[in-house]
Length: 186
Ligand code: GRF
Image 1 (spheres, helix red, strand yellow):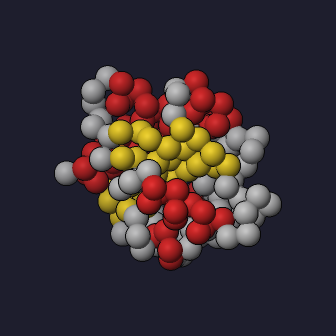
Image 2 (image 1 turned 90 degrees about the vertical axis):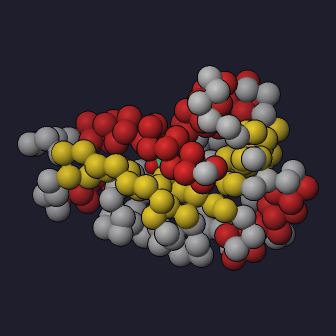
């Protein structure tokens, strides 16, 4: 099954997915990386991994989502994984491809517009939550509202800092992403 990864910055999930495929732990053909950000580190990673990669954004194209749609079709992509992709995808994409996202909290709480990166962990700690975690979910036309595929949780330590929680969630995310993608294969 052909997989594409979209990311706006580091795209740290690309490393996790690539390594799992190399080890034969995940049966995807990692065929394409798309970023909206020409400075994204994920593009350098894709180059190093010898994965086809491209930048698609409104500065370069009048209808970015149409360009994305056509490229996904041309590359016969079945599944798109969002590894920190900050642009909302149109129905054209979400209705024609299985799009999966990893969110660094236990949706439906702490999701939606503006809830990304450290803002999520700040809100969780400010809300004195006892647990947080990772949600792998299908992506529809609304932020963080698609069908939940898998969730994994962890206990928040007393007086835990935002940085520490973010670090532990990113670690938990590695296995959660792989299990979530595996479920999409099955
Ligand atoms: C991930 O941690 C994920 O939770 C969210 O975006 C983050 C991307 O982080 N979807 P990075 O750019 O891979 O470091």
